[in-house]
Image (cartoon, rainbow, N blue to C red):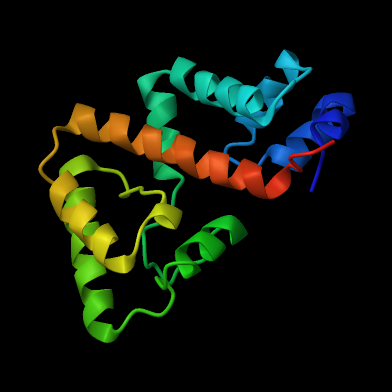
Length: 167
């Protein structure tokens, strides 16, 4: 855990090391955020990071989206993703649930050419399956927007786990 004061005093390399995993496999967001110090609040830091993502080209945004693992995957993934998915039991799917989520992952990737992203801490297994099915009806542009919103929410949860509220 860090305080905002500690983060504000770090050099760019240490700051990037501390916050580089907030956005999946994209430490450049933390690196660029450093230029906006000092941060008065956690909300301000989060907003700067989200604004950097929003300033990305569509291709850069897709690279960020595609850096995320499939839900319920048994593949190696970042520690934060493992913890987030385990929090709703996606690491303990029944064989039938595993088959359903793999089918939904495949349908989603075939339709949108990116993984399905959802802030799992706000959901249950059932609501994730429902969201999968509902979002498969979205247009590609709407789904890219939704994925980026989910990523921003995930980043906020990750920041909450890294930064002490009081200084």
